[in-house]
Image (cartoon, rainbow, N blue to C red; front, side, top):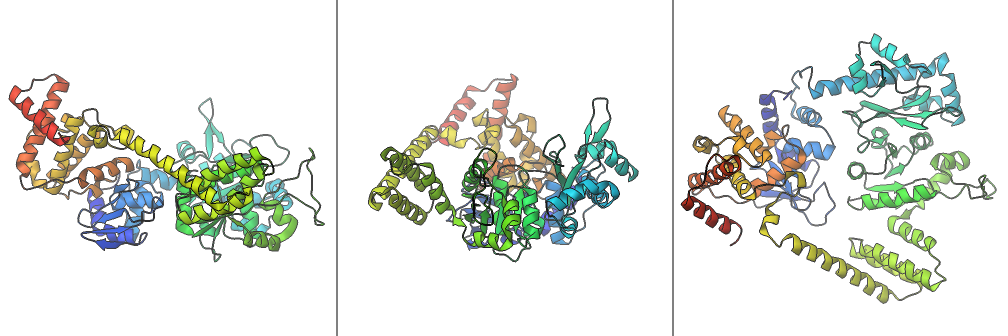
Length: 600
C-alpha cells in the first residue's frame, strides 16, 4: 500500500463514522445504532444504519456497506487515495509523502499536467496562431471575458506542439500518456491528441483540471467533439461540465443540457446554474451527484428525436434519487415574426439552448424556464403526441402506455394525478383508469413475489453473496469461514487458538484474503475493524463483509465455535486438495451441523 498503515489507522480513529456520515445524512438514534434515509438510493423509510460500536454503515435496502473511508469513496465518487486525502483535511492531518510509483503520486502528476496543458492552450488562443479559434468564438458570440472565465484555449495545428511545451516543463512521455494528452504512435513515439481544436478544460468541484473536451473548427475533418480518454481522474460517468461553477449559483435549481457550448452560452446569459454530461447519457452516478447539489433539476435537451429519447432515459435514471425534476421543451425555430423556420428537407428546424438564447435572448429563455413542465406532465404530453386519440385503437394504445407509466410511479399521489389527466385525455372515467393501474401493479407484485419465491426455494440461495463474482463455490466451508471472521472481529484474542489455519485453506478467496489481513494486523498489535481494510477491498467486497459481520454470532462458547468452524474448513480443504479423508464420526457430526445450519 502506498500510504503508511499506521497513518490510515490513525485517520480512521480520528474520523468517527457517525460524525462523518451525519454531515451528509440526517441520523436518528434507535437503540445502539443511528438510522437515516440512504444517500445511495431513493427511499421513504430509513433503512440506512450506522453502528458507532463497529464503525460501519449498512443499508438494508440497496445493500451498500463499509467503513468511513468506503463511505466517502461512495458518497463523493472518489478513489481510495482521494477519499483518504479528503478525510485527512477534515481531521487536520497532513498527508504523508507518497511513494513515487503510488496511485496518489500518479494522480497528482496527471492533474499537474492537465493544469499546465490548459495554460498552454489558453495562451495559444490569445497569441497570433490562435486567430482561427478566436474567430470561431466570435461566430458563436462567446465573449473574451467568458472564454477566460471557462479557461478556453486552442490546440495547435500540428503533431507535437503540446508535447514540446510539456517536455520543456519536465513531463515524461509516460506521464503525458497517463494524462491522455498524447497518443502512442505505431513506431513507439507519441503525438498530440488534440490538434487544431477549440479546447475546453474540464474542472472538477475541487478545482482540479481533470481533462479536456474539444470541438473541431468548421470546415475541418475529424470527430466533431473529442474528449480526454478515461484516465485515473477523468471518468465520464461521474463528471458534469461546469458543476464547479453551477454548484455556487444563487438560483434555486440546476439546468442539465446536452452540449458544453450550450452551457457556456447559458452562463454568459446569466444562467450560471447550467451543467452538461461529457457526451454520454446520464448515469446513476451523475444523478447522485446532482441530488447533492440541488433539490430541483430542469432537463433542457435538444428538441429533436434524439433529445426526446435522451430526456426519457434521463427521467428513468433520475427516478431513483430525491430530486424534483422538470422538463423544458424548446420550441421549433421561428423568426422574430413568429414564422416557423424550415430546414433543407422542409421539416421544422430544431434548436438547442445555444440557438434559442442567440435568437430570442435571456428574457425569453427565463420565461420558458418558468413554464417548464413537471416530469409527469412531460410524460403525458409525450404520450398524447405519440398516439391518435381520435381513433379507437390509438386511444387503446395510448391507455396501455399510460397505465404502465402510472403504475411504475412510486408515489400514490403521482399515480392518481397522472391517471386522472390521462383518463381525461382519452375520454374515460377516472375510476376505470385507477382500477387498471391498480390491476397492473398487483400483477407486477405477483410476478415479483413468484420470482422471490423461486429464489428462496433453497436456503443455500439465500446464503450466497448478492454479487455474482463473489459467489461461494463451497457454501459449507464458506459459512464456517464467515463464522471465523465474525469471531475474530468480536474477540481478536481467538487468533491465538486458530492453530495452523491459513488463508489458502479458505474456499472463498475473499474470505481467505480478509482472514490474512486481520491476522497480520493482530500479529502487529493493531486494531481489527473492517473500516481499516478499505484500501484492500472493493466497495462490493466491503459491502459483503459488512453483511457477514452483521449476522448473529454468540461469544458465550466462542472457543468451541471456533474449533467447530476450523474443523469444517480444514476437512473441506482436505477434500479439495486430496490430502486426507474425513473420520466417519466427524463426517456425521458435520452433516448434522449442516442440516441444522440450513434449517433442517
